[in-house]
Image (tube, rainbow, N blue to C red; front, top):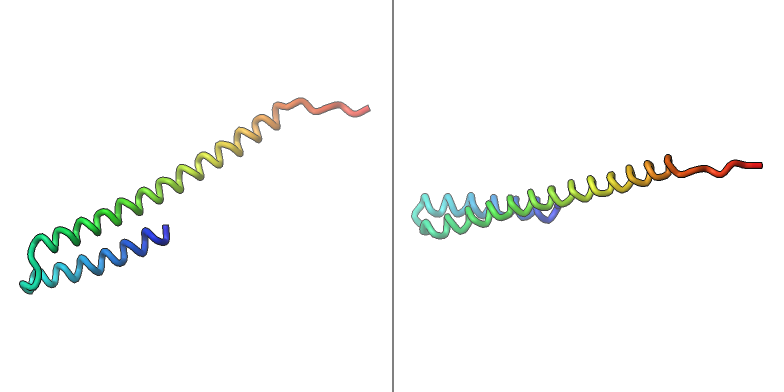
Length: 80
């Protein structure tokens, strides 16, 4: 997720620069749209990374819960 956050930072800087260039007349609208698209894609990538991490946590906790449930149900041998 660090890479996704860094990509958002870079895309934000690029978008801000593109806005300034467009407003000053040094860049066309297509360049601005391209920067906006890159920024939006970076946000999507971050959300996907967060979602994948959340899913892994849920699956891991599910496995732990299943193991604990099975351990609690398993018969314990009686000693002599």
